[in-house]
View 1 (cartoon, rainbow, N blue to C red):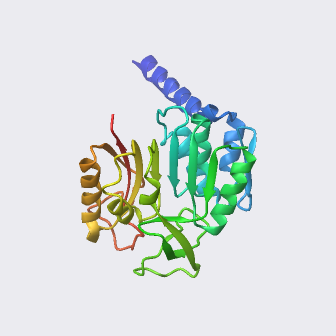
View 2: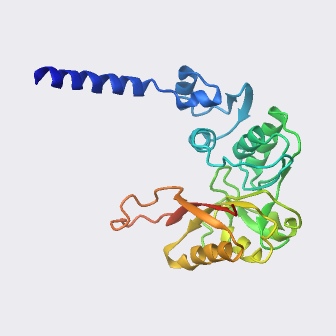
View 3: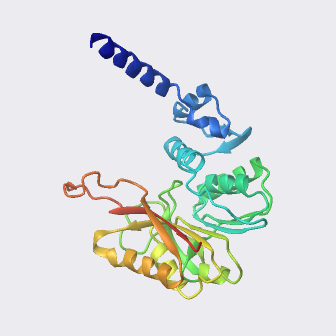
Length: 276
């Protein structure tokens, strides 16, 4: 009996040691030591080596989150044909673009990013990796061609300001384009991570999604606007999409005991919509 207990303890300790030295970053060409370096990048660092090329960034936490979500968890993993057409709405600094071009070198990508700082880094990363058939576009995706109010945060939180919560000091005017106008040919993959604007944009495109084959939507919602999620799912169903939903962020780990802290969003969901 004592021998079994000791054996189990040894196995448990060995398992923990092995887990500590596991290297999920191996799939993106990084050694265990390099993976540890990612987690310990200096706060003021602005570059990072990935696949032998330089990635430019400003926010260490957002970089690490993007590397994990996009390159390790492969949230955008998808089978696409040669010369696929991709629209990346909310490209940020370009990590999604780098992944999609790595997986689909012949694809043409329109990468929309309205934030001033993010767009500059997106451009630098496209050039650093020598990406072809990739067009960075410094405009916001919206429901009309217009000039809109936008918060330049230089982060993943940059967003269109609709007048409800203008608490930031970095408000500016930017050019916005109507997504509907770009849906006049087959789009093999449409990514929408546009910080709360996805409902208005999809509602405007309701009758124009027949040429889109796959859609990724990061939904940002509020409890007092649950109809937005309901209508987005209805729009997908009307257009013959099947969908799968995952939590993008555990906004409330204990939803019944949410506390009184005001959150930017009550819901953050990843919606994967596909035809086959």
